[in-house]
Length: 166
Image (cartoon, rainbow, N blue to C red; front, side, top):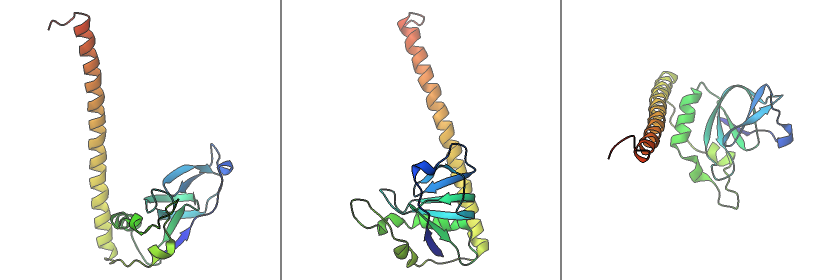
């Protein structure tokens, strides 16, 4: 892969109803009226406490200087690549300073085993299905917690007002 840092941008460049999402090192930041990349990419957080953080960007988007854009030089499933980079815990390669940072040069020297694209597709699909199941379970837990809080509040009100004998 080829690793390239995104472009500089300031908060003044953001627009409320822009056509293109802006991604920094830790994910979505806002919108803008131009883009730097088009397609499917893995982004690596370059600076801050979450350097080495992995995000996915699809379509036309603007990558800031706080993100390293991963440009495959061979046929690679970008989701598989992103999941692999997550598993590699890239934060361990950050330099210790007032503001932790990770270098594209350091990441670029790392070696990986590259299964064929068919296997990459199967792995990525499996992980995405498992993550979807986890998200659905998390949503059910959130709903259940909300219902339990509501039940607790109702129960307390009923006991305090004498509607339920204890």
